[in-house]
Image 1: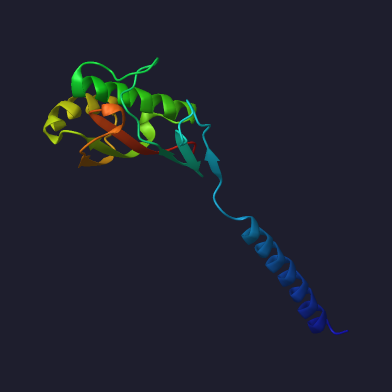
Image 2: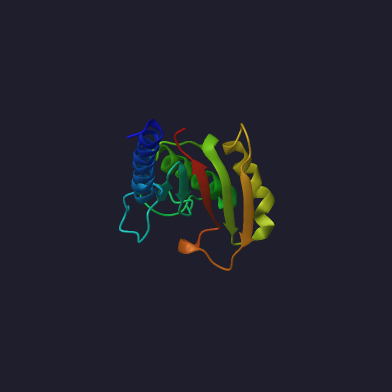
Length: 153
């Protein structure tokens, strides 16, 4: 067998292994997904992690033991963001890793009051944010906030 044929056959074998390896990786590829344990019998996960992104379910200003924080929109905003902080910490993240929030408000006239409490939770940088007016939220809450955050890396 000539050296050029031998080199050609070696190249074919190497290429076959490389393609086989690529095919095996392609079959295993896909994001790593983690669903947080459901709490309190609610029909949703507090967060879902997809690779290094966290998708948090909306949080209300509920206090431990039940009920909403008393004191209006400012108190509910503070408690809502404390609840978000707790979910993030359980997931291995923090408020510094929040990249996007969506705020749902029953009364958009309370926007300035909500902002006063909101900004205190993001001293290093403010995440991107959207806000929506609502005609009603769960438990009669004044607002609900959901977030996207990174974890790890």
